Length: 128
Image 1 (cartoon, rainbow, N blue to C red):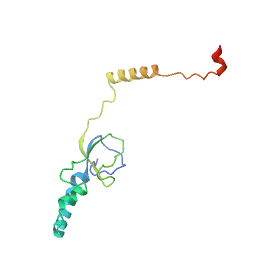
Image 2: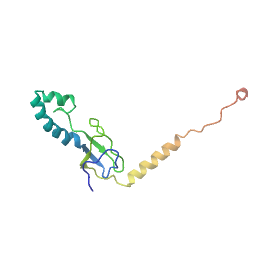
Image 3: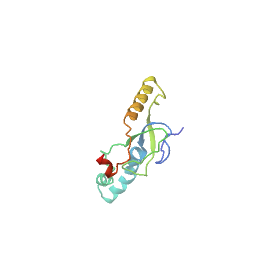
Image 4: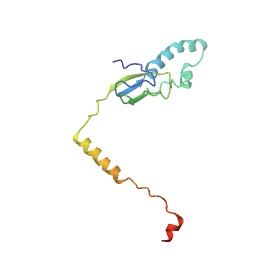
């Protein structure tokens, strides 16, 4: 199963922490390609990269995705991104005694909170 450079709006194959490929690999490649051109033109390449949101202090975007959901977009690169699996997370247990008890308790609590809606009284029924 391939878990590298997966585009936004595709289903997540494995739950875990993914990183933005553009943040990790694309920005350095663009910097290398454009820095020579910027130096040739006499432009401060660091200022240009900072204005583009590709400064040296920019962190790599990492997000946690659940298997079966769809990948979102990187806040910095929007749809021009791909997601690669950095760390797979262990699947949650399907059933356990504690989980069953918690589910039963939450169902009972939800039933206690049900409110019965009564039809509104007519104005003359208040006089009785």
